[in-house]
Image (cartoon, rainbow, N blue to C red; front, side):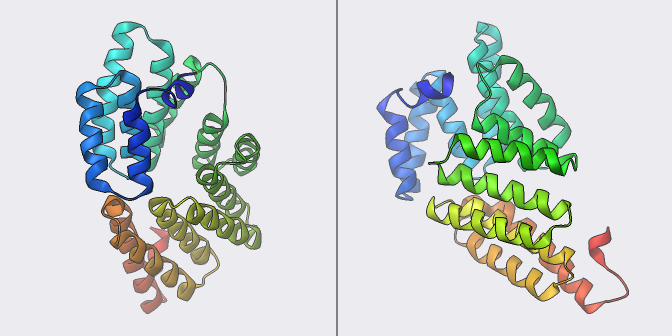
Amino acid sequence: MIDDRLNSSSSIPARLATAEAATDWAACEALGLQLVNDGTAEDRLVWSDFLLRRGRFGEALSQLGELLTEAEQQGNLPLLGAVCSRFAIAYRCVGDWRTAQRFQARALHHADDCGADELLHLAQQALAAKNWDLADSLSRFAGQLATDDDELQGHVLATRGLAAAGQGRMTRATRLLRRGRDAHRRARCPVALCQDWINASAVAAQLDRTDLEVRSLVRAIQIATRHADAAWLLQRANELLARARQAHQSPSFDARRN
């Protein structure tokens, strides 16, 4: 599978992972430039993954578009499946679920197998379709396939938490989302952690706990402010905070119903 080959490609991806873990963003940018200019298609896919993790979706989509054209021209089906999977992630993050679903279907068509990442992506599609039971089931299976990956476990728990909220099981949702935050904190994923707090605010809103909703959004804003790559989440959290405060000040008009 192409993702396995990524782990054994050139030393530049390994150095990028080290620089990212050390939050040495200048080094990351320099290494990314090397990957884009001199790297193989698999190396450039590593850079697109970095851009996706940092919330730089416009840059990621541009890089993925070049890789998609290359994969189609070469008839490289494993690369095509991997690229389509990343496209699906990017479009889910920006809220274009219909486009994400089309790319996810293409990714699965070309996949060698259906691993943890693919199952989680399907779970998130089910979540968008409000198919709560399927979202929970798929995400649980994804978690069972990647028990030693804190970042993925955090995503799994967040997905299960939102599914539980959709089912009206708010105590369970709160517990799962808290565990997801803990996993993302261990994995040092500030962008994911920011999203976790936004998810927590959504659950608080369903419980009509405006105080908790506001505190969760403030926490998300605090994290996003310290990380430039979470700018897209910072904007979202600020918008939600303004709406929550407006709803609290004007009981006759609940802005969340828009």
